[in-house]
Image (cartoon, rainbow, N blue to C red):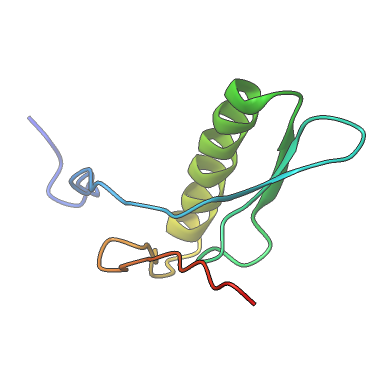
Length: 86
């Protein structure tokens, strides 16, 4: 029987994040997560960069939860790319 004072686990929520990958001249990719300030990582190749991005985001969210902060995401963000001939 659970103690009535035990903290219940919060339900798992899905979060969506836009990530920006910049190819580096020396190789690999730098990854930036705009909606999580300071959440930047690096991967040796595209696959590694995506793995590192997931790990960085999960760590960032964990810290936000520990600090009782709101977890932002890009769930309702629309993004378009326009090419302009100049």
